Length: 328
Figure 1 (spheres, rainbow, N blue to C red):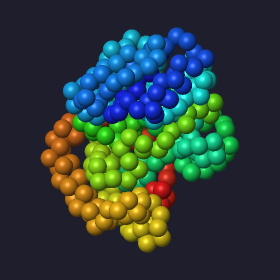
Figure 2 (figure 1 turned 90 degrees about the horizontal axis):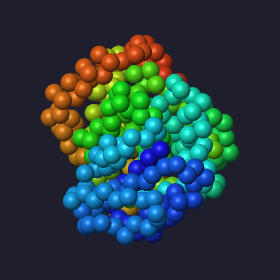
Figure 3 (figure 1 turned 45 degrees about the vertical axis):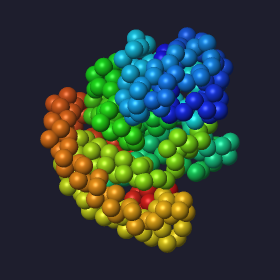
Figure 4 (figure 1 turned 90 degrees about the vertical axis):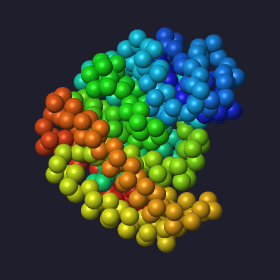
């Protein structure tokens, strides 16, 4: 077992994260901290932790991929540097994987605090926006194992066999939605994802990049579009522009209601007028990337193990409304 912990700063949050890994009941695993700050080796404590230092921020996906390429472990986990894992986190994930050979992805029970859930797996909307299943709800409502679409990259585990088949995180995403793209590629290849309620992690949500920022808004929108171009079957892809317009409408409604990321963005002292400009910039970036995205789409199509009908059924089973996306 190998755990990848990307970081931009070795502060108290990272120290808490690594201490939680030192306390795991599972003992046969290694930890790699990937320092993306470009400032040199961070002061990392813990006998297990090995450090990979990058001269610049290479992004979440590339950082995790560095660890995966350095590992020969059967299972590969990701953990955000601002997350604290329960002592039984890794053991619960491994136990589930050992008894579910068709599953290549494993979702943790991620909490914001003892009374509020962050995610119990991920859901997806008609425009390709992905959101945490159960976000903001009481954790005890999600105390049963379940099939989910894919895990949140903040605290997840993947089977090496699956990654060798479908490939690693798309490094061109840089930040955000890498877990969505990887999860959909895995689904096309016929792999399941299991939510493991006993694999508990507490996460300080968006501690590293900010809950609502210009950077996050741009990358989430750009990478959402990249994800649908690569992964959505034609029938769903044709509906994405209309679904996107409907989500933008609900964002405006939520802004006036004081809810959602648009309102959070404004409360942070930034003008919501920036958001349409960021959307246009994201669309422009995707147009420039279109040849590569279409090549990736073709590769995914030639290696898929399920039909487009079954893929659409899976998305429908794990869907979230556009209005709900805008309100979160």
